[in-house]
Length: 334
Image (cartoon, rainbow, N blue to C red; front, top):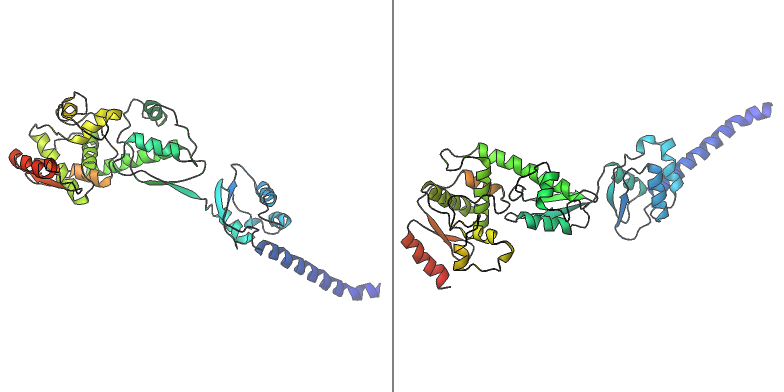
């Protein structure tokens, strides 16, 4: 018995060394690089728990010592990541610890969807349909059905979605992108309308949205937007027809082949501003913030006409005679 008592401290030391060595070996397994030779996407399924993810990573050969990760629950429960579904980009040289941190920070891979200013709603929907990582809930539905799903039943969709670059993770639905873009346009339009100039010949935010879409489609030159809006506003104030080609094109729909004829300018469509008075019934495109601001704060001046120079900019005229001369210079001669 005395011999056992004498050996007890030694046994305790040996046990401590064994435990310490085991702990350090466990740590080295977690600090070991992942077994990947190139960047790899790993997807955490919705509702997956930590054990399932570790088993999946081991089955795919990304980690070798799955036992070391399972011990986290007992040895370091605070280091077990709070899992969030989505794709995660694992890179060569990344350690197990770094991977756990990536999962815990919810740094999912995201993809961009860019909706340029001046696109139509049809173009936006086509881009959504082509986004392979999205969940497609609206594909094949009519515009009216989509608007009903967004809680805007009976509303025309054109112009109601803000053009921007939206980032999404795999599994997000196209309906979520549309809802986000719609709410952003609501906010942008509300902000623009609150800062509008007094005495404008438009009475509602929706009319401002329609006017902004005309400005957006007429020019992409930033310094011209307010001048274009000023021409439209002065024509509305004088009871002159707007006579803007983009509305004619929008009204032609799929019949537009890149050219506008005299017959097209005389065609009686709800959007032909060579025929109708005032604004068209709806927007004709998705206007950006600058176009919204131009519509509610147009530039002062006396110009009533403008014509494209052919380089993206426009020549502005105060009289019909000056305008006809500009047309001869920039269009007929060209």
